[in-house]
Length: 419
Image 1 (cartoon, one colour):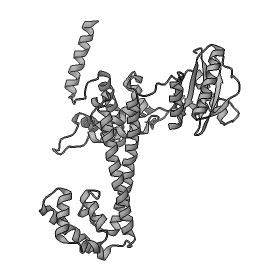
Image 2 (cartoon, one colour):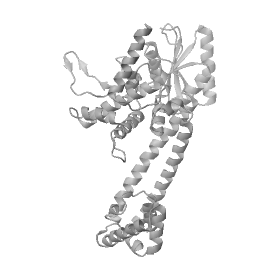
Image 3 (cartoon, helix red, strand yellow):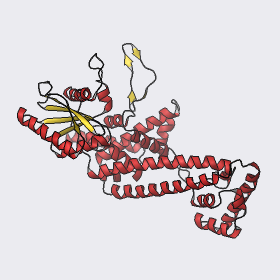
Image 4 (tube, rainbow, N blue to C red):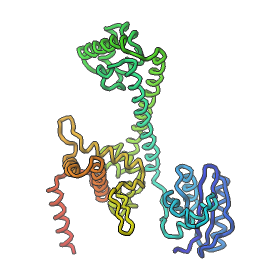
């Protein structure tokens, strides 16, 4: 093991515990507590530099990843010229039973984190590039806004089914501009039936950017819904207030999502890795989650980081027959890969598969495997594609299997000639 002073840090919201271990494996003094303020962190930094001077060896700081709490400490100590390592909580949990006696407190946790580094299971962590860090914050917020939009949209649909039974026959997309205008200004059957026909038709045509003929057809469909609602509708009058409240929130969420998306695209334009991949939002989420592509020596490591590698269970003669994803990586990565996989096997407006090569791969897999398993295999294939694109720094393009094999043979021939 390297000749270094190991400082285990158990990070909490307002304060952290520090445990110092000397190069010979002995604890230096007692674990101490310090607040996560500028004053507190500066005191810790001063103390650690004094220990370095006394023992004449550098310090390496090891802390568990605890979201933005550990992020503050990481950047402070990294900027203070300390070597810093971030530990996955899964790793720290694996050594909680290192001793038979059950003891769980912040001091002990700090010591165990330091011991984990001494076992040689942790490597120094580099801070992400400024643009990547910004992109990561924006992308995670974008995903949350997408989820919130979906939640309020589903709640709105549920309420509309009670107030306007059959409304989806008039508007298949309830959150379209024209639909939201109708619901916001005419939230009951009575108000819709009493609305001025010509005014409503003009507004429908304007908001939908379609002809007056289309708007008249849509108006007639809405009137039919309103008439039937008077007979079978079951929502109380107070639901009108709820509809307006939901629409206001939904509009705000959509506006915020659009603003975040615009900012993501502006930052992504200056990041080479994002520009190499297809789908700027999906690419931005993927790149911002892996942080630094240079950390992955091969595609298998990237697959494992995404958490879509198989979790093998074997012990002695026992071999598990139900192989599942390890799910040890970022949930955001698996989510975006799942969406990319679904998009890859869909058809475009011309009834052509968006990616015929991936669709053929999926169609072969689905013959012998369940749909979800086939989709995971497709996600695995997509990660291999992404790794190749980022490694070679060449934009992605769809090629047939024959073209791929031809290019592979040519590359092997070049290598043999060089050697």
